[in-house]
Image (tube, rainbow, N blue to C red):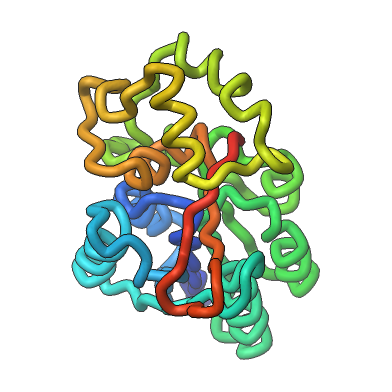
Length: 241
């Protein structure tokens, strides 16, 4: 009797992770089955000048045959990316075309989705950084650490100075619910005499948003719409993990 290879759907939360962290993980996932679907979700119109966002994701997805799903922010404070990924995952679940799901994200908001998929007898893999919240790790069948992936040369950038890391909680002490706008965070860094472009001599950061996106083991971020024009006024907000 022949044994069929499990069919996997890979769903990437691009708002939560850098494309630089994904390449080698995709190769590792081939050990768990045949990847028959790959989708990356996010608002790819944001920060077009940032090499870590729109341009980088587009080139990465084209090279790796990943379908990009644009998730525009229609209302301030709503995480359209998470909602879209969840809805499409549930649609895939009831299509019964996939034996397992891999969600590449460290966002604990996906915990209920993971639980629902497992209740329907689907294998669920989570790929995230070491700071991924415990509930999400415990909900899935297997957690795969980006940092520990074999031959992972594109993982999160090298560690930032220990002195800076110890100072970070103090820099966020006046934040609202733990969140700062990227602009406010940039000003706080400047006032504290920190130059994010020079914090790590091994890595070059062109913009503050790139610095935040490339250090998702330390920061989490979200995009919020401001004003009435939902197509242009998108601002980054940052918090500590």
